[in-house]
Length: 271
Image (cartoon, rainbow, N blue to C red; front, side):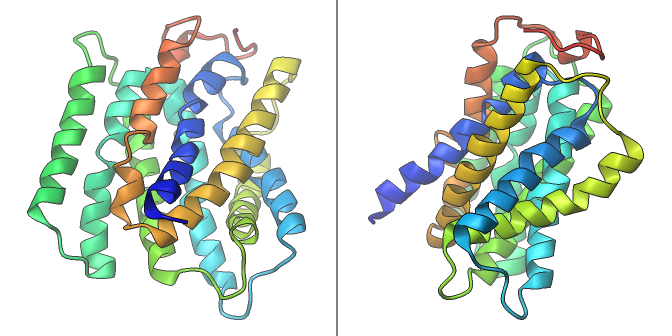
């Protein structure tokens, strides 16, 4: 597979993740980011384990746990919390700084040299996203901002470690994604039960939303994403034209109700 084809396939992952804002604000019960992260990760991870038919080999259990927590267990609930509390444009602007975070972490962890042109392109890209999506009426909720920054930092470190550790010989991308999705889901399970619980009711729209996020935004997207991270330069997926900031902004424009997510009733999702 040539590099362009691989990059295009990898870009399908952030395109699907761009729908997270729309699905979260229009279909899922509010106030349950841990539950959303759990239902997006654990079922998809168990399905991937069944399809991949491979458990982590010796020496990979702790690595899988660390990657699962960074890429899934920490990232998912922070992502859903940010989506609930921030307009899509503000969330996209925060996510736009991820290439800069990846460059810095890559220099520290992978000993990659920061090329001035690459750094300038990442900075211009982040600034360009902010200029396009932010306006004078942008709502800068502090909790949402912290959640968004924490989420992109966790997944940036997860990308760097994924690149550094690679994938065990003979293990396919489905099984590899399954390890991380399952580890992240198991990390979220006790946190969800202790601190959040379940909403009073989950309607049909919410079930469809969870299925979409788990099947497309979880199993399929992460299989493509992890394969791309390992075979492409680490900065390439984050700087893709179809990266999460631009995709998120597009899907926000498709929303039938362009309002602040926090205006929803906490007991009933709107459509």
